[in-house]
Length: 553
Ligand code: F6P
Picture 1 (cartoon, rainbow, N blue to C red):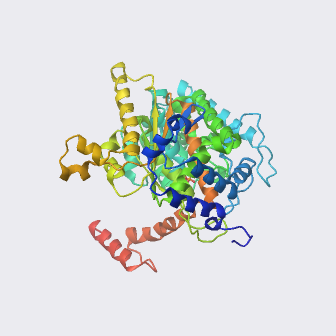
Picture 2 (tube, helix red, strand yellow):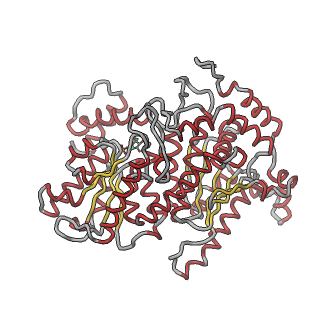
Picture 3 (cartoon, rainbow, N blue to C red):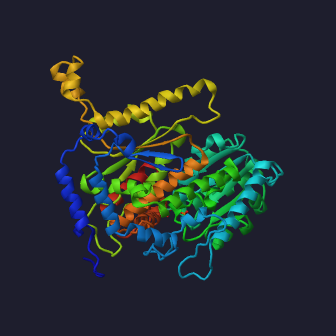
């Protein structure tokens, strides 16, 4: 029980009922579940917008799902959901509303931030979208020219975390919708190699830098932006006046943008009620919008909105983010699963899982609950994965035959993208054959009898046996369009929300990243000047000395 008299999660009757149910189910076999219910393959599915979601290959029965929904009721997941959509300050440790859903609200929607006199935020959202659209059109049409009058052909987004991963992921995902005459690159790492490789072959006169930072204080971004500005001015042999034509800012911090020397007329605003990892459909998506055009960007927002509406209104039994969130709770809390694999069978989604890592792990990587007390249950999983089929020839061995339970999401598309060269289209069926084969093998495995029946010698039978029973969700859509991408991202955003609500943690702060930032600032003078850093531990002191020696200082 906490100070307000709320029962702790693991002391609720719903939690206990799930623990007991897990015991009773014992080693439930997917083979048996499918034998017992021939309709399971169609019955355990959901449709959300363009997404067909199959959850039949999970270690659950109707009773499991009902008990999980009971837990969602007990933890008031839908109450917190409604508070989020209403603009309440549910990010309590930062005293902020959580309103990324307002970024894709219809123009006539009304969303107000609790305790804020500014009123409806939606007109402001659409004003920024319009400003972004006008700017993107100017770049795409060539109307906007650089300092020397040349057309902009290169766009370099400089940002990190949520100011990089979202637009970089979506740019890759929607490459076939991009203007192929534009070169779009993303620079995030404070390692100068990142910026160097991004700009080394570019003509500065044709290059636009989009400096993306919610706070405009992030050291990596400000350092890279400063180096980019120096490079540009040197290349153009121009004075500061050139900056206005080659630098725009995406931020909530007007003052810092002005301090940096970017004309605030070239700043695209967003708000403190948008978390960094929930921000790529805000102004942070400008580089993406330039690449795909404003219409496609708005189609993507429509996709987000469709799933927002689904999450807000669908009953628990049909609510996809709720279901996916609860399945994660089932494995993390009742099966001791430590990680969750996301395996897209689309090369265009090569950065999808990296994006989800921040979304999920920065949101739910917490060990203190909303009451400030240490949680006594597992919270967010390690999220990992890369596109199929590559992973099949690398780490799938461990998923199939290792000792760990790794629930996985398989995401695939019925059609290849439109502009794939005709000769390559046929490869799509082979890709998808692998997609279906993997979830089948993971679920049903291969018994020793089946192996023996193939004439395998006895001593090899254990090695060639597949236990199966590895749970997967299959998400299938017709094709990867901007709208479908928006739907997928909103699905995962709300899934993460559901889990944070069940675990009673604040999914919207990220205090855990602060200590490293502070220590890096303290250590830097020791590297550069050999300065004494008071309180530095013995291991780090020795490592710093070794670094200086190897660096020749
Ligand atoms: O350090 C973590 C973090 O604050 C993320 O949450 C955020 O997405 C990233 O840094 C970048 O922050 P900003 O957009 O303010 O530069």
